[in-house]
Every structure is written in C-alpha cells, then in structure tokens.
Length: 60
Image (cartoon, rainbow, N blue to C red):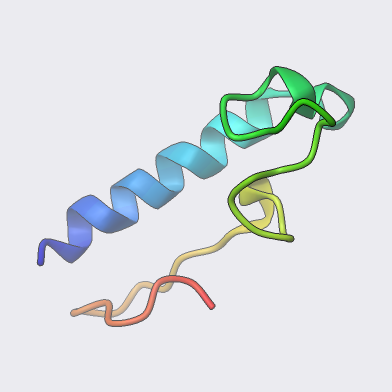
C-alpha cells in the first residue's frame, strides 16, 4: 500500500472541507441533503496526519 498517496488523499479531502464554509456542508460532495458529513462525525477539516514512516494508521 502506498501510504504517501493515502496521506495525500486525506489531506486533499481535508483541504476541500476547509474551503467550504461550515454552514454550507450541504453543497459539499461529502455531505448529505441535510448538510451532515457522510465521512464521519468529525469533519475532514479537523483531520490531522502523522509524520511517521510508514504510516500504519491514518484515521481513528
């Protein structure tokens, strides 16, 4: 598994979430029709990654 590509994907999703105002989650491709995030309870803009090689666990 290419952990760097996985880390880059997570950071891309997080950056996308940061670009959308919190009250506009309904417009996000990761949001439902009620404006709730479909990915998990914590919005992607609050995700963080760990700088370790290899990255074994990227999300809780």
